[in-house]
Length: 309
Image 1 (tube, rainbow, N blue to C red):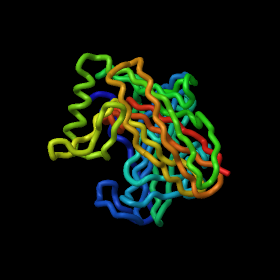
Image 2: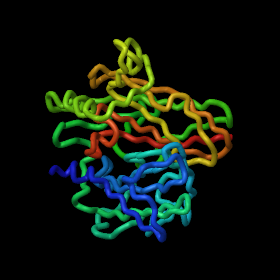
Image 3: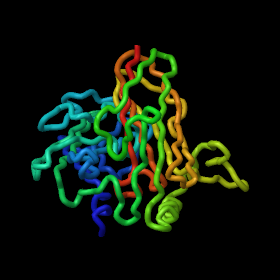
Image 4: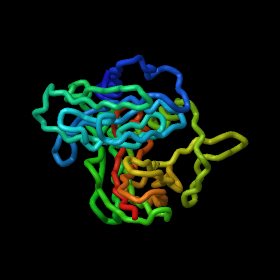
């Protein structure tokens, strides 16, 4: 088993005073628990060591908000260590990263969540089995997309290191969310085809019909649903905030036709129903898909602060 595969066995841990549903039990629409998830750890581009975390919201239809505090805390050193306060339904991978000292060693941190009367937690540390190179898959030579939140601005790649950009807006008025992305196809010959084949073997998920330039994705062809196969996909999700957010196009397919020099703009808008400070999360996946096809590489996540008046 490769290191990537070992890391793919994401660590979920539950410690509850009363028995809560286990992660594999059937889901309900609402009223369920949320499991924090330890994804991986490794070096970032700036030389720091980061631990990557996500979560599994068992509520199929209920997004949940848990303010920082006793019900959403990371200790020691918290309770606030940059974790989300807004939890989308389902499994969310690679949501945020925590910088830790290289000498952390076996010192452990714990992320605890309490929602719907159920408490869950996960303990994480620099476990050798969870080490991952976030910037190159050893097997496929795949690398994460390069993202810019300002055209020709600083390049972002891999896990997020805090808020990277700030914009302002007005309550109940659309606020522009833009980014520019490029991607180098997997370096080993045939690796991109393998990634596409691996995705094709998963249960079919038909995405909404979309047209990008002269390319068509999703919808119906020859009377049969056709899954989307863009080169990259941008997903916008709320990360923190005092109110509700409506994103005009939460999933944006991008086409580069395999050209590593192609820089593609992705634009949408978000409308906020309450004034205050929000953080939006943009996750940019290449053809390896969510979670890098289980290897925790290679995608890029960027956090954008939106000040709404």
